[in-house]
Length: 203
Image 1 (cartoon, one colour):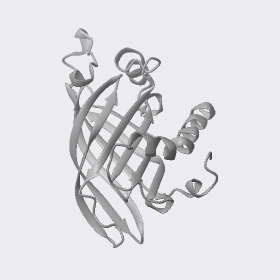
Image 2 (cartoon, helix red, strand yellow; image 1 turned 135 degrees about the vertical axis):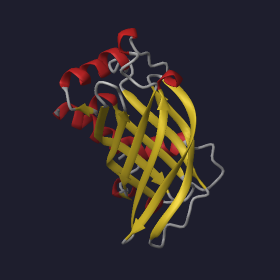
Image 3 (spheres, rainbow, N blue to C red; image 1 turned 180 degrees about the vertical axis):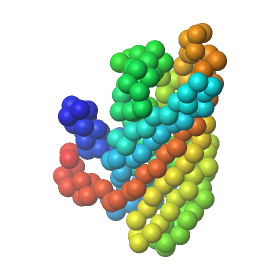
């Protein structure tokens, strides 16, 4: 567990560099350090109804960055950080479905379309567009989301569906009747200013 946490913290430290480089194609200004909001413990869960037992897992170890100047958005989560109610189900998830040793992360790189002004408290419905990579397969997504500002703190929330076949996640024949072909993913992130970005360039 400590090794896992160290990896997540390391991802949090390199996010600002990854964030700027992966969105260099955007014509908008990259903004200043104060425009970069970071969440190092974003909550991601997924749910799939099944005849025998519903499948649900969650992780609160995702890292995310939001650039309020140009709407760039980034998420990354370690697949093995997802926990299940039953350990056997968690084992099957990592070994049989997600092949977590081969594809250890899920990653999203995209943008908030028509980025709202987040200087005032309020709830702002938005559209998020980008590329989601799961199981080594990348696919374009456009999903509805909500950005909320309360007491100058920004949070994000989104719910969307992922089809397993779109990411070449195969369901064993014996389990085809027990597992849905798509899962509902819920994402929640509470952001804060990236204080590390104001330090030395190599930080």
